[in-house]
Length: 262
Image 1 (tube, rainbow, N blue to C red):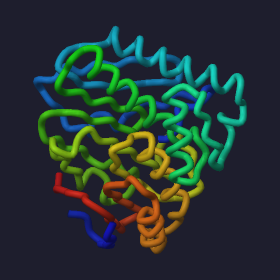
Image 2: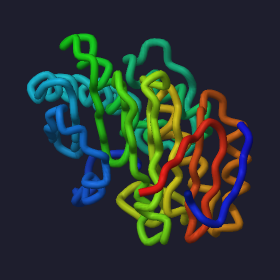
Image 3: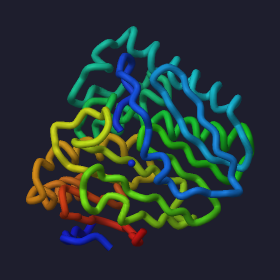
């Protein structure tokens, strides 16, 4: 990916069991698709906001329970999976969603739970496509989004107190989907981050990888001067399509990213 940094601009963390719920106020920043019904599903710490061709609340609830059961059962037998801050070995006997998280963690060099929100969003979205035979689905899980639609979409970037927050949006073309759009922040929300970036937004064909990579890149960005360091890190992670890093009044881009104003 080619990186560039600009001063002016033209959402992850893990829904780990036991985390305190925080209002998802940024959801009103997701561009509405008036003809696609919106609905929400909550299962303990998992809080999903969806749009699809029709209300699939029941099917979504079943998919979330299945995802959580696989992850929670695996954690009971492998407690290190929950707390590891570094990658764990491949496990060919693990459930599919766990294998995705393990792979994403190895690619991004983080712990596997850094991929959990993206992995759940992705698994649920794929299940709805398969079981319900729909053409359009958007699944948002704590700022981490899985998109699979037959139309172009616009996703506004929420970056906390940055003056760029709400001033720029990603344009996602239909031929780029399915796509994961995942955001990590060191200043907003409940996500764990060693960094202080207002937003690190990663695009990847794998939402699990996008989630894990957003965490890894965000860990490097303490100050605006670190944006280029974060973009350089992104170039070394295979499977990423684009990255946006916002820290204060600075914005950096890498890869195939199309931005628009408010």
